[in-house]
Length: 125
Image (cartoon, rainbow, N blue to C red; front, side, top):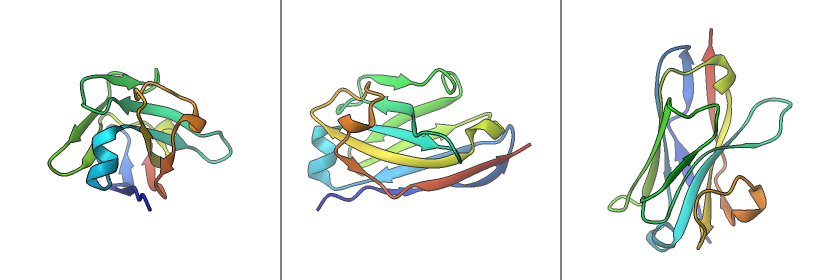
């Protein structure tokens, strides 16, 4: 059974930074594009950022472009989302997702086969 384990969420003030991590098994990590989605209270889950299986391509949602950076570490089977200059509107539950054989560019939930349980990010003004 594939598991995605997120960590790194927390509560910060606006302007500060957080780094989220998503770890999975070697087989899944090596063949999957990965992505982060987030869901704010009362809103639909939205695409934040995605990365190709080899890390060669990254994709960002318009609201985070220039502030968030996505990377993956093959040695640790872990994906990282560095979030800088956080804003209150970045608040939500952040979910890691894996898409075996995909590109990492899709913002459709249905394209991702595996999901983590989510990690809470709260940004206060």
